[in-house]
Image (tube, rainbow, N blue to C red):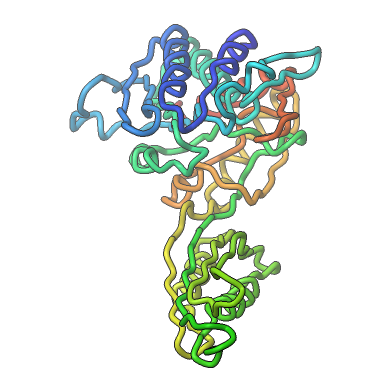
Length: 375
């Protein structure tokens, strides 16, 4: 597993570089086929790397699904091969390891999770006859919001009895992620009236002033008692100090715990009203990922916790403000458990690492979880 992990980490796969992402995906495909004999289905993409569906079980064939195959239920495993690191990063920071940890760009988020999934599926199919199909869907653009893969993930989720997400566990504690915030992002454009600040100041309507009112309103929607946050991260406007500004703009995001809270805040955002007479507001954007609510993870987490005890270690659960493809599947009402990948720390950071002794343990846990669902 460590040898495969070293090869995969050193195959750079920045989301925007289709050729590199496809190259790394080919390695994952090859190891999957060598270890499991499963079927590969490529979903071609023009801009991003190709999405890949790896599947095996009692009703998996290439080509279109027959009526009998659509009736066969499945277990869905989710991962992504793309990383945030640019091409050339491994030239000065390649894969490395010491007695306790393995390091390198994307090792924690989430190339170790991909390796764990392949070996877990391999161990399962070599020892048991499955009563359901297993589908391992590997996303190529997760780090940019899963723009080209969301529809495929949701399609597979609707055929699934459970979804296991191989995103890394929450930091060094190794906690599974049973709850994730949903994310919505918006752009606010404010239109005012320009004029000379000295000669015709009265005739102008300052868009920056209006934007200031709206920023205060938006920031005020934050409600820590509900764990809902609104953050205006970028704001701009104006062309010269002696001109009354006629256009201003802000970009902001919402992060919330529940679907009902997301609906409430999105409604508030879309119905914002101007404070100054003569200004107009235009809001564009929407929900990127719906919330992953704990009620869709609770039963699978209880199962995982019991299995971990049998395997000789303990598990914790956690909530996180970050989002993943598990948000999509849970929002469809499909039982989803996240954070089943590597134990370590430093996602998107230079100190990114995984704990070597945890790799086989988490691989075994995933194999047992899948078997529990496939009996």
